[in-house]
Length: 294
Image (cartoon, rainbow, N blue to C red; front, side):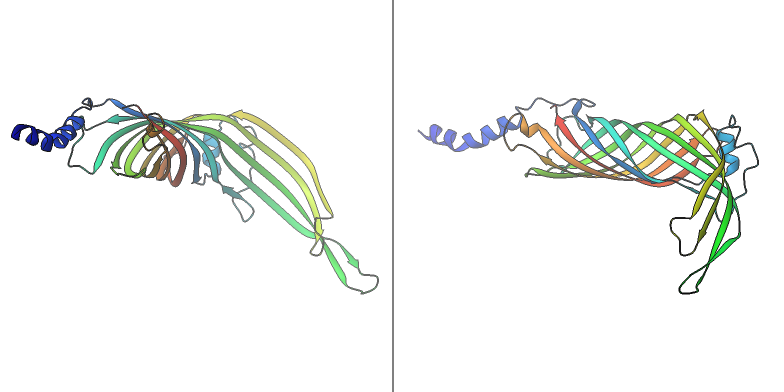
């Protein structure tokens, strides 16, 4: 009787221990999960001079011509938001789970593709003079009409980024369906050049300060060329901050699926053919789903 009572008293502890060790041991470097995300990358492209554009596009007939020097009407810019597609696999780094740790370590390997990147610059020279004057019939007010002659060169560069990323993540263990993680990573890849369009035009624009749109905006001459953009190098160093929500509490299927949102501040490196390596800050914002395999 005493043996039976002792067995009943210890039965819950024995069952708990049995459940803890019922899980099969996880092997190091085993794939724990796979995920897919869609988001955007926002970055401010570095400014490229006329000499660098000529080095990137040595086959451009127009850029080798008498392009105006940089002045108040010349500009180059590139702050854009691009679409971003990523697929990832998470590798186990701890083997059997460490019972005293509050975090699970994971190496995540990803392949990212960012299409529809754009960079452009323009160079322009102007000359303005008085074209005519108008006098109001009832008020007698005088309106001065100016004429501006302009010559403009524009270059548009389109490309995509393809990168392989490796990130070290620490996932917080929680008893709820909400969780969070953080980490850091690096990526290496290439810039895939697509099309490059160079445009040249001259024209006249006549207007007065009270007339909008201009009275006359006429293109006198125009020329253009389409070139194949060169490939280049792409790389980055990033921090990772993410939050996720488990879709199911106990269901065998839904409890393996996690919705997650991730934010990555990035130091992005870019090098086109004929130019020096440039760096600029960027932000990645991604929403996706992660499926546990183990």
